Length: 216
Image (cartoon, rainbow, N blue to C red; front, side, top):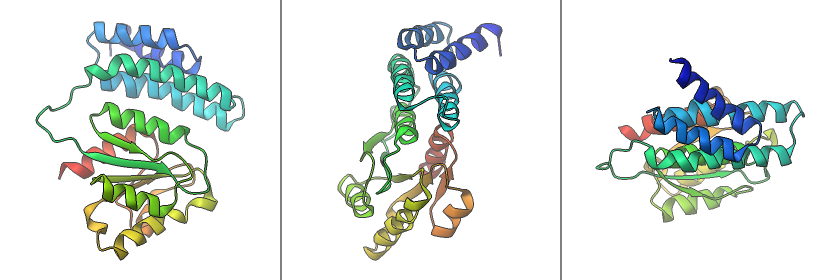
């Protein structure tokens, strides 16, 4: 990696961490000017900065107000980079329904996944937070989704995830959808146990997971 590219990616990351919208947008424009792949700039720059901010939030050095400002900076950078995402124009857009499980109002991680998945060329239907299992099923059927993405940061709301899968099975439509799960207390072993199709530890991995699941 060239020093110039490394400096731009660091600038993108730092801009998000430091809650600097204008700087994030400027570094994003610089990334395009230097021919840096837009997806790489998002994942290794902006998303990296958001992950750093998330770590500070977990350590109680950042609070919700700071995280929201970091998210604003991330969005400012993504808005510049998104038109430059390389997407196969001939490919039919896949549809993703995403939301945070009922009882949980933590949606920062979910929002980051939504931004990156949208940037990857997918149609995303964001149900928000505190979403009932039946609402995921209804939205997936209504929008003819390819993927249902379930998120939670609380162990007390994890039980809603297998309920979504059970409801799909009861309707005889489980095989129509790929189910992915993520969030702080979630693991690959939990995904295996409840019969999910995949688990992602972070937003960047979620995009690659979805790509792998819908490619077949």
